[in-house]
Length: 408
Image: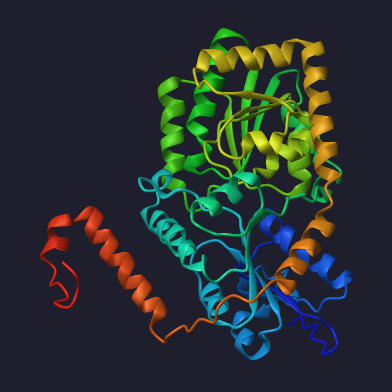
């Protein structure tokens, strides 16, 4: 396991539940570590689990209690509730929380009840960190505002500047032979999960194909693991609409992803909940015109690039697709706005911003001391279960025995 401790260097460690290979959070974590080590900090990554390809870069979160001191800083990447998070909570180190957003459970309840519950619990548990954190950072302004609404008194934005190196490969030429045939290719990249509203993409494509261009196809690239039930509903919709040429291709390699961007004519996004949405920036990088629904973090991520729409009428979106595909001058003007937005994003001083936040945490006044009693998280979990009853089973909640010493 990686270890970089040095007695003569200040320490800023990162803590998260899992380090994934190639995903946006994993890339950000590794980027943060590079900046910290280049600036002279000792900095390790503590996790519960990691992709086997990244395990040599990590340490077991159970090493934290014997490693972290009150003089150290922990950068805690909060997602769903985890043992790593709860361990970090109990330590004496100063803490900067980085919030990457949690999908609202209402998007998941009908297709993945267990994950919906985990998301609900994660959003609830986030509130427990309000008094614990010296600083709470969103990786977008949308996420920062959510932290502020939860009561975090000191917030900021640690901007996402995605690595796009995975696209700088030779595109898979098999895709060119299969799909680069003079037809119009409409592309979406992202996980096949309900908040992405893949069903809306299918309806938009159906309207475009019927009203404007029968020589077109929809390419949906992204993993659907764990959401096979949702995938079934999408295939059912395709069958009911009798819409051919919809391809749900699943997860792909970097070369295949570069190939899909290469043969696409327009990137179409209908997602209703995003904390940032890296594929939008990938499309900018690949000079593919973007049409995206203007919800949550999407407008800020696009930063004036591409085209935002706010009406999900399939006929209106189909007309937008047709305009972008058929009007060369419009297409070039859209690409110009995307180039400018991408230039602004890449020019952000990620290293300077990160190190400024680290200095702010290290030099700020210490928070009041706190004691985490042995059953703190058991009490927290019990409070969650009682809240479930209060909301979902009010008659049962009212029948519970009341504490006789409590105020009426």
